[in-house]
Image (cartoon, rainbow, N blue to C red; front, top):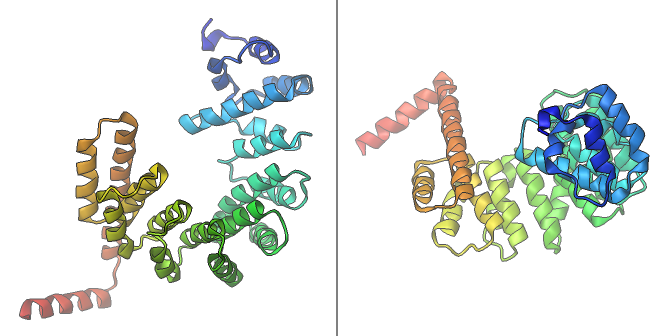
Length: 334
């Protein structure tokens, strides 16, 4: 029986059969689920054991990571108020691509009042996307402000440390002056996980004032801090970070795979001809298909970075161009 001819009832029967593994080939059938099938699933949901529910939801989340064309938002919305905290947390993750303002309002409510930590963690994480939308003026101002207030209250409060750190990272997108103070406070703490969260928030701020702080942490002995600093350097396109990151990768002293991957991507965000030479050479020397794919993506991103720099140059006004010409003339005379 092929995927295209499998009845949804067959899928539901397999979901209820806890004695057998749930076939992964059925997962795509939940994408863009029809209203009648969704209602049938929700009616059946209370009779499915929790382990089986989480197996399905984690399978859908895994498929989302590997296939950008699938969407399980309808299921996410339907399970957002599920009695089980683990299910609610998965439901939020299924809604990661949504920009619906109603979701922002739901996430604020979950962040404030959900009785379980995991859904609040997921809400704090996803609210960052809505803070960014607000900064881009693509979200209602009142909702944007309410989300900022909710996240800042968590950061400044006595909540679970993991929740406060995620809230700081998400509110890092905000241009509110109060957020600068929260980032400074976290960055100056002795706990490396707080420093890492502060660096992530710096990267999301699009604020050049954090450049020196980020660069100062690129060679930190704690890999969590190095990772966050490398990511922030790319997000902020800090040119002073380029030779440091290149050195980290060329000298082979970095042994953390996630830091290496972040370094490659950050270089593609910062740009530069030496970056292209480095990435091309790395591509020629590797045989790992996954690594090859990642480096090719980084080279494509580098093309976008270079195009953006050319566009910025073309966007200079006449006074700026006159200044550049004067500099060139001075160089020629010397």
